[in-house]
Length: 105
Image 1: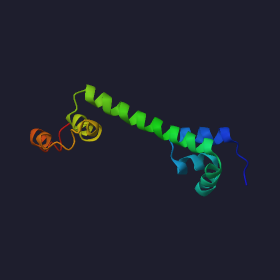
Image 2 (image 1 turned 135 degrees about the horizontal axis):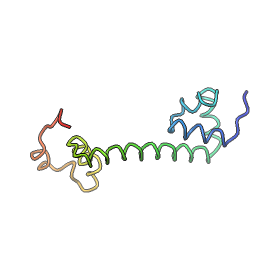
Image 3 (image 1 turned 90 degrees about the horizontal axis):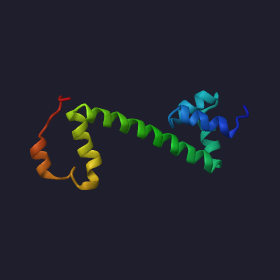
């Protein structure tokens, strides 16, 4: 089996945006081999989480850019998903106000 050091695995996880299959291909190993290495190494599991958090940050930035451009879809998405913390997504009055804007951008 190919010897791969932790630094290479961490880089592959970040380059692959936290996608195990993608990272394994970059390393030239099977997905199951990478899972086994991660199972044994807490630092690798932590790095996987960091890579996935960075992917979420990237997606959030796209939503913010869309909001700044006045995208109604982005605004509705934020209200439905991020607004849950403020109990906006379950508010029946919001449903009446927003209605169904499928197809608007």
